[in-house]
Image (tube, rainbow, N blue to C red; front, side):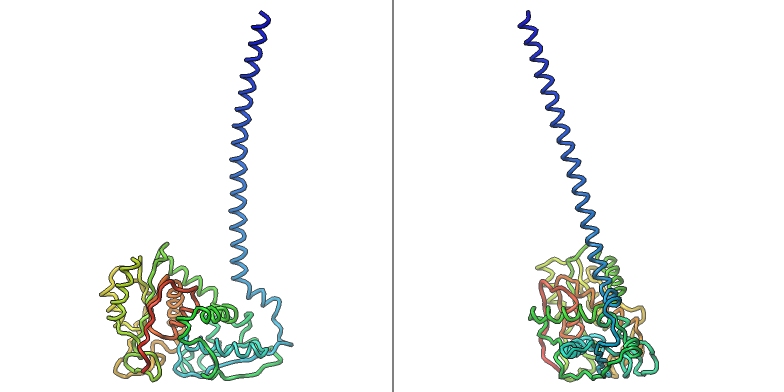
Length: 355
């Protein structure tokens, strides 16, 4: 009898031990799951917080410079201008990039002046606009402003930017090292205004939703077609570009095409041939370019002095720079797209000589 009772006790203890073991294993599983959830939450939170901190740093780094490094007493300033009457935004952009690099090497802080000479931004009348149009689209180095430098700085020199200065040229399309070099200079010394970046990002979401499988197209027309400016690259005809676009689409099956062009007639040809996949951003006001007068586009009455029209053109180039592939003529705007972007997977750049 004793033996049987002892045996039952052992069985009960064994069952009890098994029960506790199962309970402990179960509790351990729940504890590990709980710890996994907590750790995952912390990682996500910290990552999100780090991204926000990183984003805020990039968005506000020029404000930090403004707080820390603005020194009007000891810094040397070079106020630079490019007195080009027929230049558009990205012609100025590439010229100023080369010019400011020259004076940075000489120890100056270059300040870009787009207000003291007649140009497309001030309607070719320097008295019509008190503010510096450049600062409507871009920041100056360390967020100085032309106005404050003129008022406060003690060491200022004025320089003219000539065509002989080194600046981004068309070899940027095929040479990644050159492209990366100029991109680094541009991001540091003439960054885009944050509000323009945000506006472009909002338009991208509206146009393409979550897709990034987009072919960018830059087609030049108007004065290039009618006026044929000497020494400027000959743009391809729309029909040639459309043929190449369809071949690229067969290979890559793009979700969308994004067209940048100032020419209403060229846009209509693309709309007719590329259909629903074609997206574009235009100004509400038709520029009504007169092909018979054969004049530079900058002298068009609906464009000169129209800062908002030029802003939409800039946003077009920003969107173009974010496309996965690109087809384009050789223009200053194309150079801008290559500098502002992070590189393209496939490119089709037309080399058809100059006028």
